[in-house]
Length: 277
Image 1: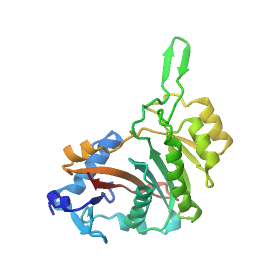
Image 2 (image 1 turned 180 degrees about the vertical axis):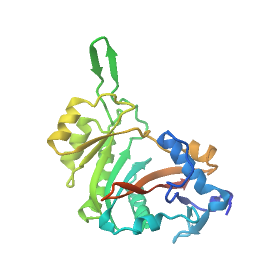
Image 3 (image 1 turned 45 degrees about the horizontal axis):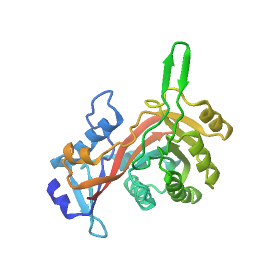
């Protein structure tokens, strides 16, 4: 199937499958790895597209992929499946679509953890940056909202959708990326199922703000660092580098499957959802 045939659909879901065997360059940034994996999936000889139930969605995946085999070769209790959702929109429907699609791709009914990376549209990035001057180190205050007054309300609506999966025991741990301490407090206090993981970007915050460290410590929130960009896949990259034209990415899900007893990474991959512009 040629990429031109995608134009007849309103939506496209691209599943890279297990990318551990995909030929990637060493030391890549997360967005560069994603592009290479999507290129391997969209290669003309490796596309298998099927029509969705509504006949408006094309599902594209790599042929001869071993993802399902890697997930099922161990008992479910012996593997840990974690994912990070990069959400380009404030749509709870898109969030739910991403989660349900990942369940289908992996052939599972639950995840061990899911981290949400959502950044308000039109925000001005003001994450903390450490400035060294002599013996004095100043850490500028982070502000996840970027001046968008409705941002936290949008995040709470997304979190409510994630919460339901946790309450239904379909996701056991929920996490959030890049929140400043005030936004994290507000989300925590408004939630029924609290975040137990908080990620902070080491490229924009050289020193973790002490108030954030203290809040996470007090509420038993695991504080982790990451190096992912705010927008891991843009419309321009989808069009210019991947030749998927007239589509805009709605969400990107990155997943990892570990064998618990050995700590071995058994599978890793990406699933991308995009809609017609």
